[in-house]
Image 1: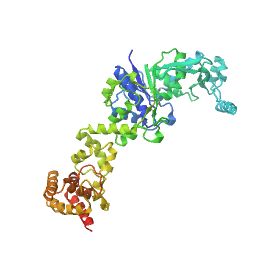
Image 2: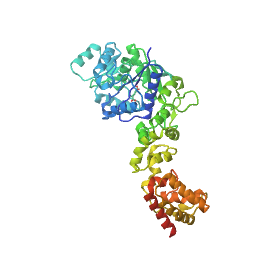
Image 3: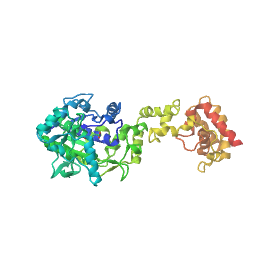
Image 4: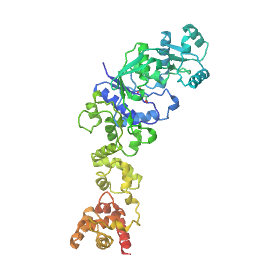
Length: 482
Ligand code: GLU
């Protein structure tokens, strides 16, 4: 048997990390087993449709490196792979069930249903369809349909007993049939309901393993009754625990930071996101933490999936992202960082120095503007206490004498290179019998106007270049001498 899995997103405009994980596991499982991974767009609910959302899904999966063997854009023998293009396909299946007495036409109007619902609720109950139209003889129902009376098609649920199925993660799940509503399969406009289309598609596309979030666990007994009504073989179900913000709350769009794009826009690397998401609910059975996509394919197995809720740990993701950033080549780092340099006007500075000082420190690329703001946005009124540092044995008075030495020496330099600036400042320190730190601290404060900077005095001076460095050093000397 060929393993066939699918990712079946609804095009809502976002890729929640939970959906991304469902896609990833379905992809990994298919690839690991030399199976087929398919993309199906579930857009039965046109009200939720967001322009461009389908393209966003393609783009994102491609960017991550997940390829699909069948799908709307690549075709395949079970297409079309967009539900809205399959609409003609569903009604005949529902009609088949009606003929076999497993579903029925329901002519109850919305007003009638509302009235009955209100009555049940007024009495403190929960309304579920009362089966009224299931009593209508088939021939009579067909006549009413032919005469143009509006109808829906409902599935006839067993009135007693249990509906059950086996889930690979959650085990044997049962639901008393008495609690199941006679679910609508075809709506009044002739279109399938989401649930019906999902089952018909999984069957007709020969899906062998259904992998999705556990929010579908409760509907699955109903899905199974459909498989049974048709006499179809059921897929293997693998429902995954939700990704949680904490022990009580799901990771939700409302809290921000729940969608893949939230993270890429902040400058997380896709490799880190995928690696982290893969480990939310799956573990490789050993201590390994870093996986490329091909390594995940190699390591993935259903046994590693966990039943306990996966708690999203932003600190861990940050740590992992920082690790991925360290592993980039300088060229790759520059490629990602450039966007952020441009965003804060730092595009003109020497990228090689920026990479050298930033790559070891940056955890996410969006931190870059805040780390190098002093290059472009210098505030000359920084507090003079910044010149005081015990370890470097400096204070404003020492700093003034240091700058008195450094300024003429640096302004005399014909070439303002790292070597030249380095040798000049350290020679001065040696000749004056000062610790290097006593020389470099005041220079760095004067150049940056802040205490915490990536890179030291020499790197910052060379980044700023000679004129701007001398200007800032002069400002400091003037302020310190007042
Ligand atoms: N369309 C559903 C979603 O986006 C997927 C349901 C399924 O995988 O069966 O959540």
